[in-house]
Image (cartoon, rainbow, N blue to C red; front, side, top):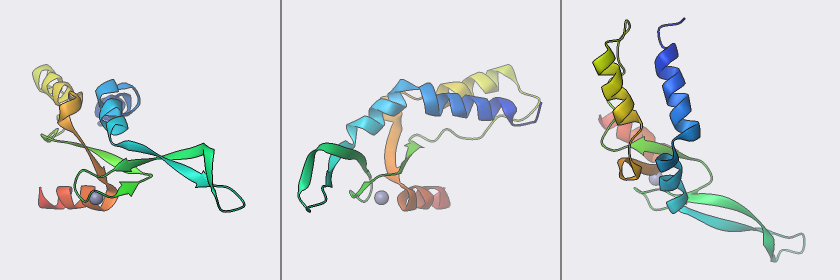
Length: 112
Ligand SMILES: [Zn+2]
């Protein structure tokens, strides 16, 4: 087992199944209706766009940022308490997630 396997599995679980994360994302979502061949807006076909909490623009692809930050990944071999704390921070409640576009998300991580 690789050093990061546990942390990677937890992160993947969080991205796929942690419903507060999905709820936070869906709260920022709006439907963007597609254009038909004649240029008018379709009333059936749409795609989702998500509002960036920082710049206020809508994007098809956004990141979900932990606020407060999830912090340092636990080191291997894992200390059980440290790992549990990490899981608690990772599986944050809905209020602990911020929808950010990719440029805004990158800026957040450059600054800290
Ligand atoms: Zn943004």
